[in-house]
Image 1 (spheres, rainbow, N blue to C red):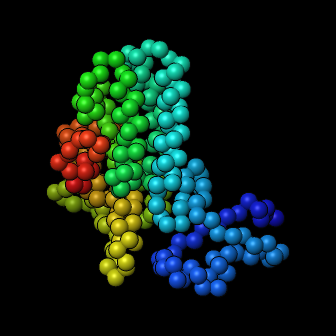
Image 2: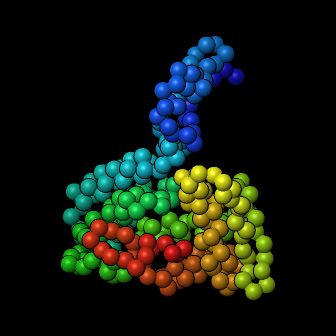
Length: 264
């Protein structure tokens, strides 16, 4: 099979970001890829893969910025087309058209930077401000009144649900999670080992990756929840469990006790 060379892109992940290293004459040759026909594929900073933007500096900010921009456009269109501001109509529009954009493949890129969390949360914050009966309420109070979770809390919920699907063989265990059963705490997952000799930026990316963060979230669940075998029952029990925690996402002008993660 012959492949189209011009449709390929090269993305390099480097640990040493020194400017002196980038100025070396052979540096570009080590990052380029030359095909058998002599076509040179130059490296790029951002690559799209299955709708998710991957960046060479291992940051999810480019993908989040594009996601927020797309969601804002849809939200503006919905607000301009529909005059009804009742909670039923507004939240139906938001859940079906806007929130789906903000949560596509979110277990992969679930952000840890406060500015990224705020950028995503601000879309829901601005939209709910237009809902009838919510004027004058703070964003945290609007979440309670409309009976919805913050986008930050929902992303952690998705991570937990995906772990359940892996453990119950609804999804392939391609990241090789190591589950075990504890007589007192039920189904738990062993955290992958960390090489502490690596540089701090890599350690931070490792700790915020799905393979580490999702098992830590799963291990918070009590035995009465993590041993449920049907998906619908698990979602109902998980929803009740999540609502037992205060949901105060980081937004400008609000002072929260912590960063609102279940792990805090």
